[in-house]
Image (cartoon, rainbow, N blue to C red; front, side, top):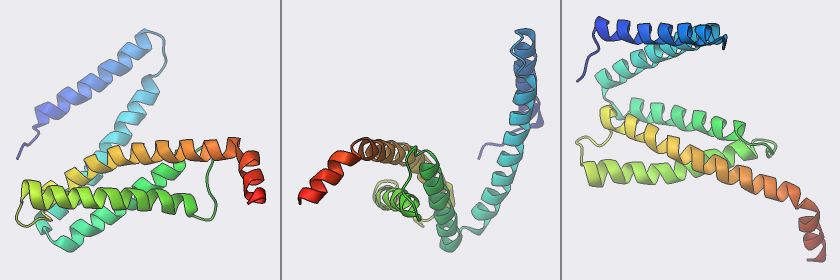
Length: 167
């Protein structure tokens, strides 16, 4: 396991401050936004670090599945948020989430059971990072596909309705 020292954290903070100073020096006036973004990122990483520390200590399949379910649901919300034209009544959210769930579940189980052969297969040190990587890629693909599909349907709605009327 790799541990970060205080020196590593100080170096990272210095780099962020240098970025803010450079932005101010170049008159981009992004210094305040950079500091706010850095503080927000730090808080988010600390919170997810605490959650992962608890999950790694427990190493029980229920908690890993709960974390995976929350991750799938949040990724589904992100897919819906990326759509220019959205389906109503939860259909867009459901289609995006179900698409990501079905594809990434098959791949993650295949990777954990057949390829990595980790015992137990639900070890959070392997399952959570792999699911995160898979969902990142799947989320991009599903959101692009749904956005393209919805945009094409919206642009050609008159032709589609005419064809439906004609049977």
